[in-house]
Length: 431
Image (cartoon, rainbow, N blue to C red; front, side, top):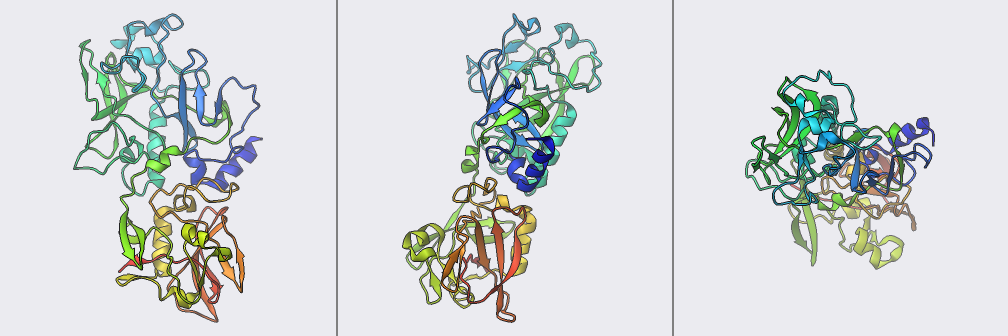
């Protein structure tokens, strides 16, 4: 696949590519004989056989685990300058902690002497084809995460859902983009103290501040942001490696299992002997399941009751107006417009499964969990697995009502006019 085609594809799948949940051939940039290969979301460091997860965030590939490389024979600058955490004797959980000079692959005399690298791009301790992140790499990560995280704070978005101590002052971590930052703490330069495990993650950048300190970045359990700081160069901090798509050969789909662990805090509503999930999104409480109340003017897709269990029922406009529980209403077009503005892209509203494999990955970032339930027109069923249609409350004009439409190929949801006798899904919102 040539690079022009690559960028057209990534533009078409938008957020799906942004977080690395693309279909198998979207990132096959160069021939398989490239020395740096990501296969099925994993990269193997040929130096020592260690395997790392990989995520695509904002056009850059990031390792989703802290580096573990330790061969001081091949890289003498590592000798005595990298450590496993005190309760992680083989570095399997948290990765290694490196001094800044070890991470940069520099003689340790630069722990107290200026290197004057001026932010240049360096490989450092990273494998061939990868680089030690610059300040700009970290700033771009923040910028791109904040474009799609609904304002929750980039730190919340980047932290793993595991290893972090709970804090009542900030929301629970979401790992919304698969970065999977663990609360790995650091090693102090006193030579014996490991601290902040469970509360803070520290990462080096390639930029030094002065002779004795270099810039790094930290995530805290009680802060929603990814914060810049400067740290003594002989502290032990974690290392993440980053790469451009140009430098890698990628085959298969990137790992998306982290999406199932995003906390949505679903509520429940009992109605008509059925249980529906509810979820608050941008100040509006939605049903997170399609209505499944059997009334006149409604059908199961292909008249199959199993489809009603999976996707809910399909309703005419008149039927749709009658099925919301007391205290709940059919959303207006403006409510759907607000949802779409918040989401910015259809992929974050789509369910993670059930859609055609021609689609980019559904991400279900906010728990809306839109299923591709299709529709019914004059007795004919259509668009199962390719589209979700939801009636709005707008009045019928010239025989047409208004539906919100999410399909498998458009990056943005849209509203469209449909004959009021057609049958589509219904979501209700709390008054």
